[in-house]
Amino acid sequence: MVPALILGLAGLAGCGGTTHTPTVSASRAAATIPRSSADHAEGFRSPRTHPTVALPARLRIPAIGVDTPLMRLGLDADGAIEPPSAWQKAGWYTGSARPGQAGPAVILGHVDSTSGPAVFYRLARLRPGDVVVVTRIDGTRGTFRVSGRQQVAKSQFPTDLVYGPTLEPSLRLVTCGGTFDRRSGHYRDNIIVSAVLA
Image (cartoon, rainbow, N blue to C red; front, top):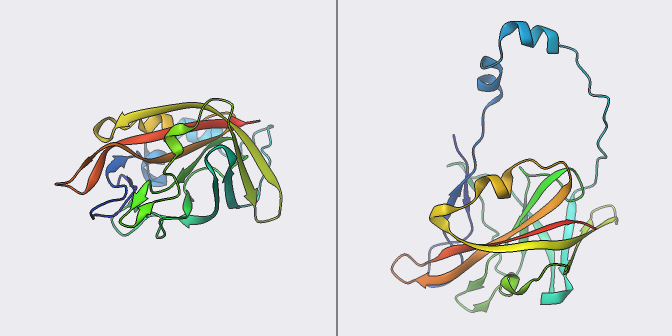
């Protein structure tokens, strides 16, 4: 099953659309490894260690006035990423890296709502060098700096960019953007901001 990233709810405003991120089940992955290779790999332990960091609890982006607790987002029964249930809160997708660990930590938020701007309303205004701070449940912080921003059509969502593995800790902040399609009740594009650990 391929989980889908759903950033909003159907309605007059908000952030909606579907993108896909590929997954391979453990059983399927094992089936693709030749038996001889699997035998050699059994018991292997990497000499490299990766620090474990606590779960993220809060997100601050001073340049655009964001200060929000982070909800935990999983997958629904259809394999779609649950959208944040509150317009004014962002959510961390628990299937991605924890902020500060190697790999992309994916954080989602709505751009607006039926009653006005939402938590990521100004996300598209971020510029390279802007600071993004994630506070964890143990009180530690990860400070990131924006490295890039792009606007893409939802039909051309860059799955590899957002979910693909990286050697360094990074963030992907995602919301909706572009023009609003009143017939579907969704925006046509996604805004994706990338940030790296400072």
